[in-house]
Length: 343
Image (cartoon, rainbow, N blue to C red; front, side, top):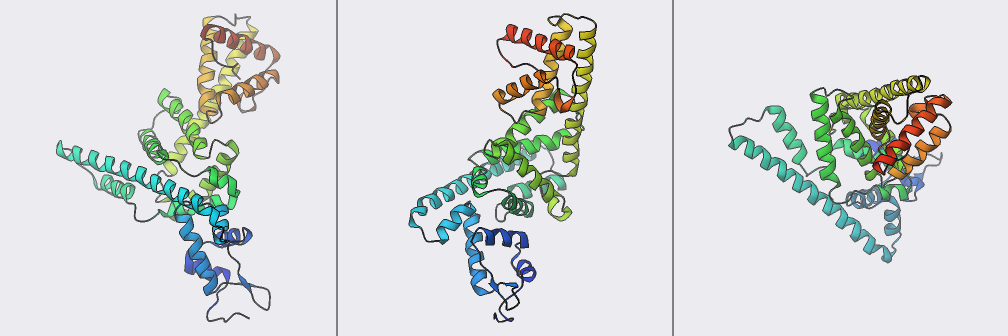
């Protein structure tokens, strides 16, 4: 039976190490961390488990996935090359972060040199965004929730590539600016940003829509904790703005379906200017709504939706409306030589 003075239950062990009970369970299921059992069958963690946990966290800190950690801890020498490759990738990511941080510091210096001023809020933001000594609490919490949701292969697919951090920082800065000035949800800048934002999130998930969905759930759970959310690159105001854009795009698309239905009832020519303008606007909005999908995948979905007489967001389309949109879309394709039917 474990010595009570040297062993702790899951809750106390989690509190002392700063690792959640859920994470401990994940490590246990993956065979990385094996607690001992008391005579009553309860889990207990002692010096051996603490040492193993430190090994796991150290390997994670250089970018190695749980599958790779399991192999390394099993003493398989063939994994050394993979471990070094992962470390190289992590260092490249830090280098990209350092380059971005340097750029921001230099920009602040130039602003001051031209007689500009930095507010206290600007200075605090600059310090937060250029500090590399510790991983932000929100990022640690987010990565932990990712581990709870993703398979080892899915986790490996999310490893950031060189330049990802720079692009993400630029996008979040743009998000803060758009939300901060209250950019209208259907303004061209808003719609274009939403298209690029959704595309980029899937890129960070290794190109998988399914992984991106799980990652979004993990992010929402992370941001539900106010203490953790305070250090995140964007907060409730930006999240509310993103929701407003999505809701506005959906509402506008439904209004455009109604307009298409009216044109179809009136016997309008699908090749007329109003019909073509309507379809072009629908394509622009649907790119923002479903920009995370490849162009080929969007084309497949749009064509299938028209066949089934459905529109974006599940809107029901009359047969005449679906036919009208398909013909107008085909006319645009004939004129431009590109693009799938709109739905």
